[in-house]
Image (cartoon, rainbow, N blue to C red; front, side):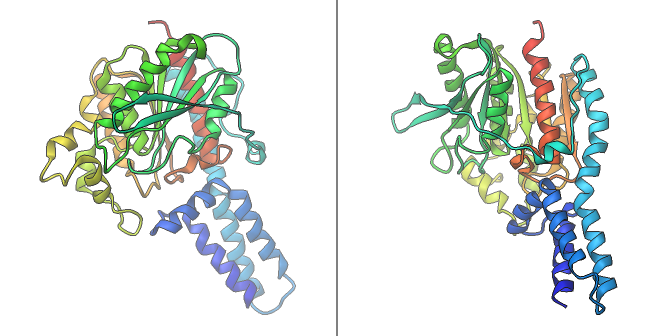
Length: 374
């Protein structure tokens, strides 16, 4: 009986690989289910095999266990499907030659991520605060492009230490990486974070010789709230040295986003936006317009990489659909990587199904925008 109950529990957990999480802690669990699929499938397999000789409830437990295992493995199967088109499509969209690397590999699910050391640097000092960045120097000698990474956290939490694995990975590939802190809500509101991105670009350009930075080649990479900041900075600063933006599940349309609040069991999205923008939409509509990256896309906007999971329960998938449509309208080079099984924060595991595909897309995008001739 205990075996059956445990198998049923793991079956119910497996459904997070198919359906959106209905509550905050289940969303966190969904990241594990979808990006560590072999771990959950393995535990379920052990439970299933452990009682095959038991007569009572043997058959029903085994059937439920097998179904759960198949569901746990579904992100791997779906990753192969996405990977089959990703390599061709992103190379076509950015006029890149083909390469030998596969976007997804089973063996990489078992790989580790060894972090690189970084230097913490103060990049700006205001009258009431100062801000630092974590600098990961390129592991390849010479002047190299610089990726400015902007963390998530609902504009009110988080720091430059979030999800550092990609920073080390990109540094090994030959990019300088600067993961920045920025002024956060509710004390500071938009456009303070965008001003901080501008200050980071200025600091890194000023110290380019000692940091070995090619000042003509900056790329902004943001996650969640950080992606909104990255998009808004790239589309409004009009800095010709910002060659591209990488948008991990970012809110691109703040006006629309306020009108469709998220599940309150996950997050009070309207309260988050009020803290960041100084009030509800009804009272400060211009603040919502001014913070919507989608409103500032024009024919001169930099190339954009959009990455979003369809099961995202914090930032609606619709944000990326709207941004994709606007970029299409103005003929901006871009690519939208759609991950049908993935939820918010899927890239927590760089070697998971979503982590592998997004890392591949980031690599190809960076190669395209930092080597393109003006």
